[in-house]
Structure formats: C-alpha cells, structure tokens
Length: 289
Image (cartoon, rainbow, N blue to C red; front, side):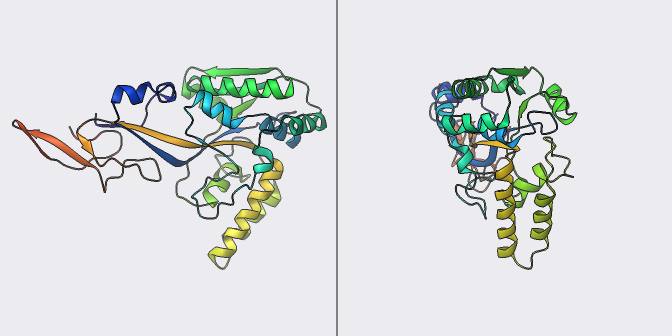
C-alpha cells in the first residue's frame, strides 16, 4: 500500500498521522461539502426558521479547530469555492455564528423539543461539538444518534426513517454549480433525502438548463441557490480538507481537485537488486505492488 486517501479523522485531527508518516502526508481543499440535512417531511423540522436557528447556532470555526484539525474551510453557500459560478457569501447570513439571531429564528419557529443529530459513528467527535454549540446558543436539548454500520445509516436515511437532522456530505460528479443543486434538492431527484420540495426552485433549474448561453445558465443557477438559502433544507458546514498518506516509494505526490492522486505527477520508485530505479505510475488507493 503506497497511497491511502482514507486516513482516520481522529489521527488527522490530533496530528498522529503526520507524526507516524514523518512528513508523508499531503492534503488540499477538495470539492466535497460537508452538511447537515433536515427531514423536511417531519413536523418541526419542516420550518425554515428552525433550520436557520440551528445553522446560526453552530460555531463552525470552533468545531473545525477543536474536532477536525483546523484545515476545513467554513461554508458560506451550497457549492464550494473554486467551482465556476460560486458566489462568495451566498448563504453567509445563515452560516455565521450568531446566537442572538439564532434565538430570534427559534422563537419564530415555535419549536420546543429536542434536536436530534444522526450520523455514522465516525462523526462522533465533530457532531458532538456541533450539538454542544447548538445547546449553548439555543438552550435546546440535543441528542446525537450514532450508527455503528454505515449501511444501517444509509438505509435509515433513504427509507426516511431518521427522526432528526442527519449528515449529508456531497462531492459533485463534475465541478459545476448545477451538480451541487439538482441532485440534492430537485423534488424528483433520487438523492433528495431531505424531501425538499419547492416548485420555484425546480422551475429555476429547468430555466437554467434551457438557457441560450453559459452566462445566462449560471445566473439562473445562482438565483436557484438564493432561493435555496431562503429555505435552508440543508446546513452547509465546511469545505472538506482531503488528506492522504503515502509510502517512501512515492515522490511528486499531488492530489487533484477531486482529492485523488494526480497520476500525471507521481513517481513510484522500485527496488532493483541493491539499488532503486524509476517505476510505473500509480492510481488511487493502492499504487505499485
């Protein structure tokens, strides 16, 4: 195993991976957006004011520093920076940490119960930090519901059996604004696990698809994101910091925009007798043999 892009989150956060690999850790901001989704089909969670209240109660910078190692970039919209058409600060009014505004939205929502957060067990650390932040800002009881098996979690989400807010990370198939919007939020998308439905949003996507030129299409996708910001069916959290480790056999290790090993630059050295020679290029996950 020469290249591994699935380093344990706890080891990345506390620096043990970097120490163990002695400088053979690389990372970069990828296209993945980490977020929390609301089951809009459940009473209480169907209220945009509650969703805005929870988002404004999350101190993203503190959670990133405390539980994730400090490299993630707090989100300010539904796509990530670097994607063509990204508008900086599009959802910033509801992605800031503002307990006073959060309490005002909570009061308008009338919500008085406990807020549940559902996730695979791998998110225990940062999800617990989020729950503490929400409790501190809003005074609401927060419960973290963890699933030992990712399969069980996926089945609960896809079957709409979750009873609270749930983790929803998204890495687009291609770097386009459209691919951060349609798969997750169009009413007929199979990936719309939150159950979000807004005919106006669907109509804007259709108009963008039918635009006569790229500039017009981009403007219409941006308008769709603005509408999405008013509804906040998801809470954008942060742009993921992708981290990978590699063996001493690899040099010129670079990760591309999709957080995969860049095959155009990497070199694999292989032993030949008592010396070392140039080897073949590798790929994601495992290189050489």
